[in-house]
Length: 516
Ligand code: SAM
Ligand code: SF4
Image 1 (cartoon, rainbow, N blue to C red):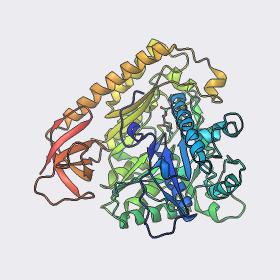
Image 2 (cartoon, helix red, strand yellow):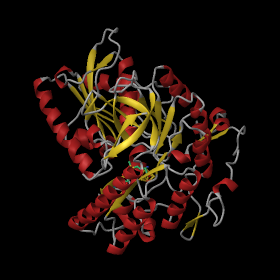
Image 3 (cartoon, rainbow, N blue to C red):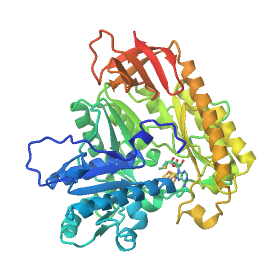
Image 4 (cartoon, helix red, strand yellow):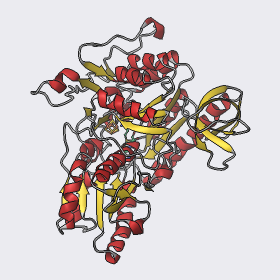
């Protein structure tokens, strides 16, 4: 897998088992072991599952031999992710021979995609639970204990788990994910997420603010607001209280397209300065909460709490969001803005609803409103019918955007997606891999350049803990999401402290500095 790891989709975290981090003052009946794969959303969901199980008298363990229940929270985004999980489930199945009372469950996107196939054909597991059905886990476990197969893969239009306080496991105690919405309405043709995670719905802002405030009071200093498309967060408080409208009832409209160009009031006009266009006070007081408003509310919890968010969709990120980011020091100056392809023809086949020109204008706007803002991307090599010229266009947009880092993939056809139904997966694997390697090589060069530009600069860094290599060094992040390592020296800082660090050296992936 060609990916440059960061904490948002950290390859080193794939298959991570939760550490026991639950107060030991209860009489636990049984132990569960959970492994998580895929995106940050899945890791965040595992914390909701842990909370549900904790209330049922289960305790977490990171030791397989102690487990009465093994859960695998799965990802379907690429075929390789599914293969990894299948292999793991086959290994767990062997443990069941030694301990027949052991229950094995598959959660998340693969559960949703393959449904009863796991139970009936493959006979790999006892429980199959989709991303919107975690509340039914306790009942399904009782059924499975009685020898019945427990399955619930119903998708919901309302479930946001807003009232469930996630149990933070494997946490560094400083940074946490907070889910603000679920599902996706976008239907990018390559993507399985709309089918496995259902329709988009936004979580009520009060519960988000409460979760972030509780985290801050517990010593956390950074929250990452999570959603497949955070810029389309939209909570209609009036609808939430009116009985005839589903809770949170956002009217999710499709982007309006004119030919190949998006019509949007946020489209920068030529010659217009960002400062000529202050953020609108959009709908304030009218019962609507947009993502920009939510960001502002979270930013106001404390100047000592850093805020990040992921993922932004280029068609949806607004000036209002960018101005809100610029206004608050504690909203990190970093945007993950997936490109997928730099070719208009491929973007249209991908159903991404923007053009390369639109994308570039968003990059320009970010840099205009927030000079020095970090930008990263997702890129797919070898989508159906991609020519060498299409591929070169992707490289050109990368050069233009000067990404600090990217997640890079080759196209993996997923059954049931629009692309699977409409287009032939016609790029040979060897070509996909060669193009991906060219994208990775260019990104490595851009990351190195970006890091070199930071030499001599001073950044405020949030200390997350000891560096991986030495407990004499701290590891933290800049606002731009770059990892920085520096000697602790004689200073009395602790994880969660903010400290000014001067960059003296760098590698492609890390800045190295000293406290000033
Ligand atoms: N919602 C986010 C967005 O629109 O950017 C990303 C969600 S997806 C979990 C993360 C990334 O996986 C996508 O941005 C895309 O680059 C990649 N991806 C999704 N489906 C893929 C596929 N079939 N083959 C290869 N990469 C894929
Ligand atoms: Fe998938 Fe597109 Fe939705 Fe992202 S925006 S989750 S890529 S469908």
